[in-house]
Length: 534
Ligand code: AMP
Picture 1: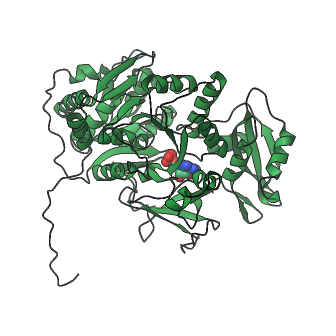
Picture 2: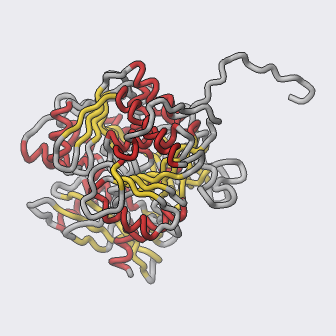
Picture 3: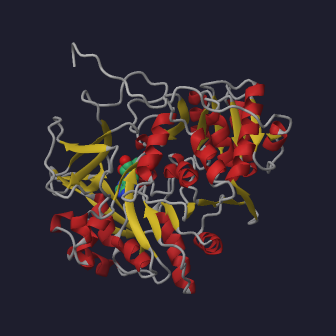
């Protein structure tokens, strides 16, 4: 375009800042309910208009205290309306809402809060002991606030008291849309945790992208219950997208067992929910044991780890559509969803199944490719695995406080996943690069063995590890947990033999009482590896 004068558009400068979501919801869906469940099982009902008012007051109090643009304010909390208030109050004034994961160990949290240089910590009362430790051990934390009364002796102040004298007329936004809005650390499977620093613009774009019909398909008629916590990559964006579309929001608090989830969903007539497979197994176990139904629940988004055929069929038997999706903290976080393109929708349902079980297709605003080790792009034949790389305006290009870019020379982020892409554009994650079992120079997908094992009646959870082997380098070890009736390991071995290539069959299958879950509810292979292999 050299030598030419570009012509500027004559449209309004409307910076894409996240306060717009709650302002829109308050103005156009003001009485739409936001229901939170407290630790004692009681519910608190509010609406978007009240959330906006409360958030503006908190913003004013934060400003009066001296929080300014770019300052980090941390939260240590489960999903609740108060957490939502804090999230919009912090971001609205250009400060950064840093969601800490309460399920992480204290030393981890101290490291992360120190690295982030959080100035204020706002915690649920239930996490008061951890919050106190953080306040003592993190030199940057000046003030400790609590959403709910602390469960232990504490020097902290209640958030409502902190906000009490502030005015309700605090201005929001008015800054550059590339300003940071949120910070979330990834669990760091190797090395230290890394902070993903979302901008207002990336969050707004991710919201517009993820509410599309071929993505999460959210509308004003939905009642959304995010099982996925706000500290796990922004609850997959749902606490932005629910006010953006004017959906009723049900925030379940800390009790996420199957029976509690079921009760919340039934009482609040939830239409759509999202969470990791382990949460769904609990819900389905409860529903099946009691013969219960959820007539309003039309679909659940299954992400964070692969959806198994068993999970999909168990939901289907109850008239609930289970939709596979995948993502990662660095992608804001939704990378793709397994909704059908026309060619798949026209297939008979059994032929659709393999596509519904893949991780999904990208939607407008995110792009992907698979590459060989030397960077050469691989074909979309559905069988050749390669390193999955992503790019787009909601994909991280670097990490908070770390110099340099995290992307390839041509601007892609390597996800650390190994995947195939089929001719219809569906991606299938074969494995995490570090979990894949390398046997005799070939790759064995731990995910595929786990999926095959979970199809066997009685198997609750399955995990495969590569165990060092003098001849083959590594061989698969399969660990399974079983329901009350137990399982016959020999029969499970026969079942696997009918489903997997012979050389993929685990050398050993072990029945265990439980499998360790990480801080986001996925099976923690790092812990398993340390326990079993040292
Ligand atoms: P996190 O940033 O903690 O959400 O972890 C992201 C990683 O989780 C991805 O890079 C994948 O390895 C894994 N993951 C997320 N969703 C899926 C899925 N649907 N199937 C398989 N793996 C998944």
